[in-house]
Image (cartoon, rainbow, N blue to C red; front, side, top):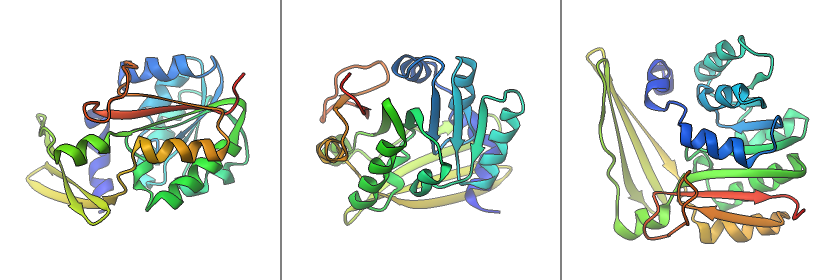
Length: 238
């Protein structure tokens, strides 16, 4: 069993749909629009947005997580599932009023070249007045303060730990799940993209405006203090 297969039964408890995040997304996108969720996990946010009146295609390449989305999709024909990875979203063959890539998913790509390819594809997949929302960790703060610690999450049936370590131009992200007397760890390299890197790339892709904030309360972004980098890119200026 892979790490993600082990993690899936606990995923909804570790990463539940955040009501503040839900409000941010539901008020950013045009009401009742068609959305693409890139890296949807088990589909918590996608299902919550469907309840708000949106139609959502949830893209998640991890098989067991996609199966959890399929179970949620049984409750509504407005939620559908794709197992395409983020590098292949053009293959969904349709356009969207909004695309969101949250939960630090973007930085799983290898480098800025792959990130630029994804952003260019996202631009082409949006309708004329569509919007792209990205949320990642504020890596400027992480690198400035060498802030690599996360609080340990302890629940009745499991414990979940996270840590960062520098490795050349990447950050190694290690997650450890302890459950049923078993301890399982997984390490993946992340590319620590910053606002300074992403803004010009989004503009070169054709986005008419690019706005940033530091959390889903829409507080101003501070490279030295904000916990997150959230970007809202508008395809059209109108």
